[in-house]
Length: 258
Image: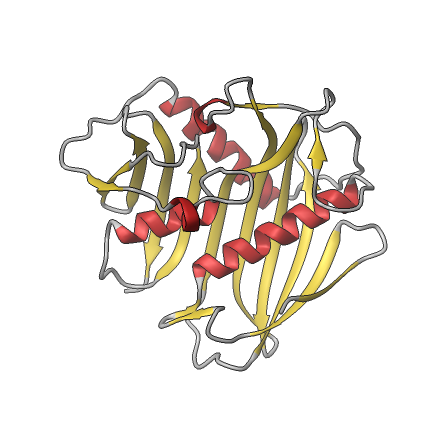
């Protein structure tokens, strides 16, 4: 169970987690668990910075609002035996202008840094159709006091913007792709969106048997409704995920253990 405490400003937190089966995979810390756990920390720090209790955000017009992830960059170092050891997560939230926020998470075990995670989010809501394919940006109903983002988060935001602009209006040809149907009960979150750790799971499912991830930078460009399938194409170290209509919803680059 995550055991955490925030600083007096609510913009940083220290979290301790004993590493058990849920948190580990055969190669070390589970990417799926790490993304989900830090996603919750990210949301909690945003709520603290906005001066609100709980994680139910609202737009200025009262509609439910979600801090949807635009990009993540995970780096993991090789590790030895971790079962039963304590993982410490040092997290900080920052502002990037407009409705965008970023967080930086540093992971240590036994005083040694074993990884880092950068996360970039923006506030979104559903339009009148309720479709996940038509989520739109919106501003929260309150202002927060966020520290300025550091150079690593600023650089991630710039790369994510470049990817988004470069792929805007493009559709991926679906021949020679891996088609996967996400599971509504497992791959979607509480508000019905394809959960952001599921993008990494889908990328891994499309390329089984590869060596462990050392770095994955993923830019999230869209979402899809439950019951739809995705098409995945790998080209070297790059993975592209598209909906059935060819619209690209994610692009990832990665580095793996030799």
